[in-house]
Length: 272
Image (cartoon, rainbow, N blue to C red; front, side, top):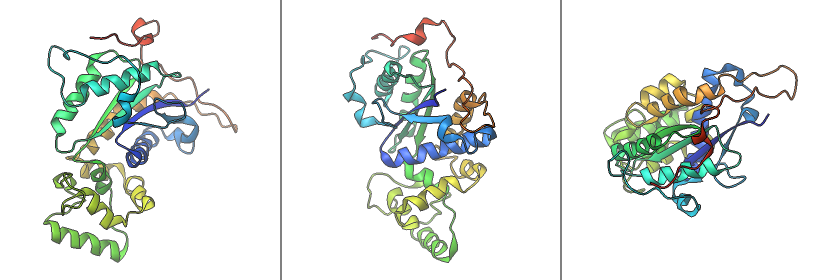
């Protein structure tokens, strides 16, 4: 039995490291049987064969029907049309994923981008679960929420940043500013100061703290909301995983996201 496919739409390669790490934390916490078996339990995918994700900037390069007109009688908000486009692309993908994760930086437009993604999710009875995440103001803030200083040098770096910024950037990362990479409040600059730009140290920010810590520190930057999306919408897709003890055993059959026999689950939504 093939692993459950999870489509992933993110800003770029750094997000494509962070998002699966966070997803896996929630899955293993909720379904302990997945511990040690994630490599064969789930596979992230993009629209192209062999790709593990698709970027928002590349969505319009794929030839699927465009979304025109309004959403529920209301004008399209930030990212709504692009989100519908990529979800239609995943419907046409073979094999089709059991869930699709859409994660976007807010870039200072948190409410508009979340509402736009919500418009897309409500637009159609998608044949897979659709999970939304808006990192406010950007992905680096989710990583900062999990930064816990290890040793005196890291503690000193965080103390210096607190004095420089006037607040703790790991506790109030949503107050940072994504408008410029070199600005004093740039999340990228702050994270680089704390981790030295090392991917391994970044990864420890989402793998080491307990989920309660990530939820508390991520309450205002969109991380807590995303973890709740994973728990509510993706965990049920894996909750029926029946792992056998013998080596090489396969997972149980995935539970369908849409009712069997529902014609809408087998076709690409038409143009509006």
